[in-house]
Image (cartoon, rainbow over all chains, first blue to last red; front, side, top):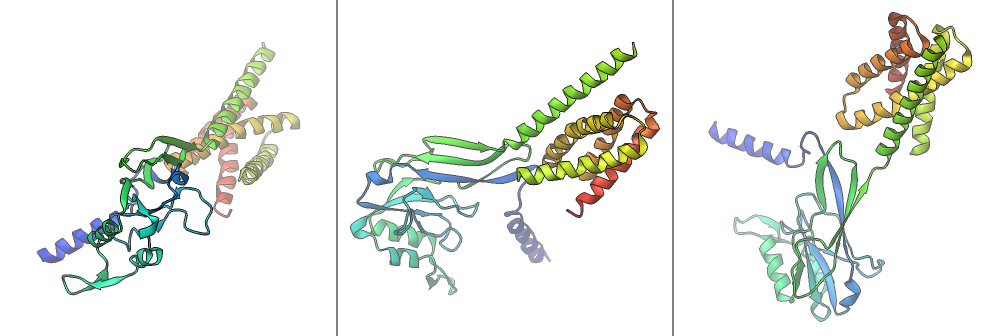
Length: 201
Length: 100
């Protein structure tokens, strides 16, 4: 009985992981790296720190895509770090194959490559962590006018950044327009009432 | 999106205007003007509060009450008639919102 209860409680906690708190809503955070072109000898990747199945390795500005320095959106519980890998040690196919590679783990179960193995691989190719634990998702009060956020980073290979250099909040201007229209209408109503009262006098 | 919102507002206004025309004996232009002002006041506020509180019926209740009060003040009707006009017009528009 106790075992069943524990299983049920643990299942409930898993289920609630995806639920947004009451009174809150989720918004995306887009992270931009502003000076990628200053490091032509490096390839930049993001990795979500949980495991490659949930928070996969992604190449920032892969060949064929316009250079934007934009980090792709991750699942809300991923806190990806950004790594710089020297171009001469970078093997894109091998790196991306780690996202889907399955191995026999210690419990004898076929599973995705563990987080530790990914980190160890990144160390073996001389990856330098340049940004730690970036956010790609947050929750704001439902009444908030925030629509999305943009975080901007300037990279320095000798430093691990944890806070963005700049933040921009995109707000929903429709709320202000609606409130403004309502106030104007209220002024019109009050004026009409005052006029009709004066007219009666 | 703006166009869509404008269309919804226009539809609400026109439906409520028809109800006002049926129940209120006043100059047509006056009815149009006051109906427009009342809707311009309550419609955006109702939308803002709906986004914040997600309480459709509670917000509709307040809209009926506020519009009834404004009809009472602007058209100088009895409060029962004002509330009935507001109730009918808002029941129709709220009912239609389930279909669109």
